[in-house]
Image (cartoon, rainbow, N blue to C red; front, top):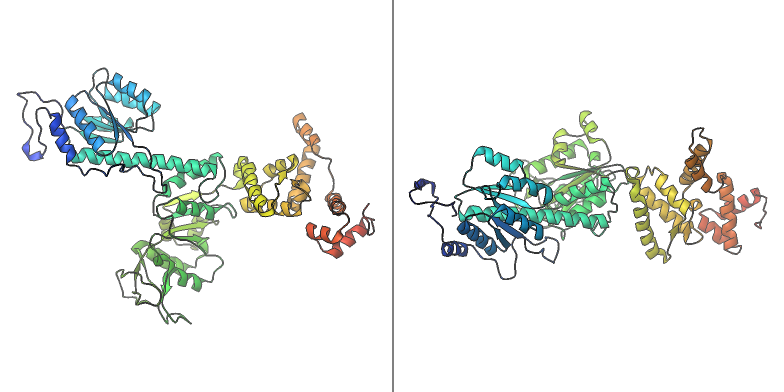
Length: 542
């Protein structure tokens, strides 16, 4: 235990508190106390390893600021014994110098210091070094000082005299918190750069917010509800949560609640006993109980029937999975066995549940189409995936990411024409990322060369381009800049004329091979000849 300075003649502390308070704790005593801790193996750093990385984080740095030398040295030795890199300071000025020249992760700070109070230093640290976790130490503890310290940004509070166990426990909690913050930042950086599994791409403010939430929930096991419009990438978010979590090596199992028959979903999720369903010649363990640490992703959970919603709610509440055909009176998890073995009636819930919905679940709750209690069980953390039109700045990054995949598949390095890339960022993309991906894949398949033009994209995108130019041209209040921008675009042409030019150019580039032209254009041979006749070109293009 460590105490403030004690002078001869001072009253002894109450012995019933269990806090023995020597006059001055000598350094050998502190060293002996430090030796009682379970020392980490050589080369290891407790609480400092990244869970999904083979490279450990560097040791955390602890700065002990206290004008009482025995307490300061003892705290430093305890921190060193726990695997930290330690520094000490005996005043506010010395502490400021250490903070200016070193990156400090955890600060043990005495409130009563010469050269200025600890609270003033704490407030400065919150502004200048917000990543540093501060633990306040003081022998003058009151409720008011504790509250004031916590409001000023302290992460924890120690009252002198404190025991060895209290100090080591506080340091361990601070280390876990600091390591979690570092891990979250590294994960956000990996997600932002696209390096994390899941192919999430984008650095717009809505995506940055998504990364912050994802980096925090990835290390937990509680349910997460992912909402967003169709095509925004909700399953990619769910896969990223799983692949960056502690059970990344376990299976990720998506279940499409909207396309499967309810009875099939029930059997897959909860399992069944032999003979409980038609054709069941052996028992089956459900996905929710099959593999400990797995993740079950319930895609479009709003499509589950009400009776299945009730079964899912009971599994989440009781942490138990009851297979079809189990004795209704059976209680208590007996463990899940493999298929065909004597599976118990009730198995423990072994999987983490992630769910998604593109429907308005709160409205469904109000109209009785979705259970309110299940909604609250699933909505422990709510993650909204932004629509593509809400993050237009990410469209060039997404388009480049898709082109890289097309390059590998087609062995061709595709590029966007300037007008085509401008169109991609202006279009609203009601189908979101899925529609963007399909449009680029189609343009790569139909393009006559490595450069993708507007005519290579689907008809609805070309129509949008045509009407957008018409609106700019016909708008009476159009600014000169807008008119000039429109003037830089190619001349306005009807869709029929664009179609005619596309057919003629394709045939010419293929040296007159009409069959290959029809195949690349995605039309039949008869349609091609009919259109050539309509254009007055007969069988030979002009």
